[in-house]
Image 1 (tube, rainbow, N blue to C red):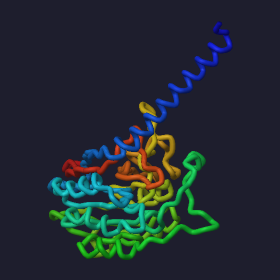
Image 2: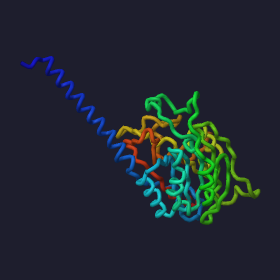
Image 3: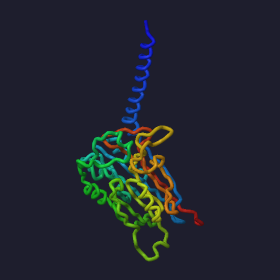
Image 4: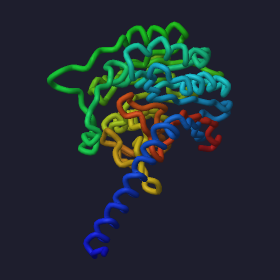
Length: 315
């Protein structure tokens, strides 16, 4: 004879089993399907000087290349078919100390195009296994007692530079591309508090009067960095780091941004206001994950193609 207590216990176990199965299914989907379901997000902005031709920026971030990632490597190599006018790499390229050569091979077709780059923390240090719950308490931090393994950042940067990509680590530089003068200013990783502002390139006395575009580049979009560049007159700011939240709630979005950026800004193109100025900021949702958390949910890995067009002549 079945008692009320046994029926209740059986119903509870059935419900628990259903929830557990659904949870495992979500993890399996995120680990084996979505993290390799690469996409290209396309955005457009009318910010170029009047009369300038259209210009396309391919924004890459948080590749986190590991050994043996064939699908990611082939997808990265295939991005060269987009024929961007400029590639901007906002850091965190690695997730394994031995992945530098595979990374350079994966990016080699894209390095045939002009490019600029800044580093992220995982270009300096190899990731370590952490309790994922710590990310719910605030931005991640380097361990105090034992420093993680250093990566050969210099060799990776030398590989980029050998193909002509410009290192913007706490540096500025002007480039003329398709007849448009771009003034770049970049910083080292704000997540490690290594940013030092270099200002904008200095040239002719009347350079502010000639058509140009000021582009700021950073890895982690901390508010202090967005404030600085916005108040300093940037026309566009590109960053990554957040992974778009990586594990998101469908219909809601990111739970964390791993910095002080509001979670609703963890991915996408938004305007940032500070000091009476406004700057469009593109935060990439990133391409990869740490090798210790190889899962994405409701947050597909992405590269971003920004189509820049001229402002109206009466703007």
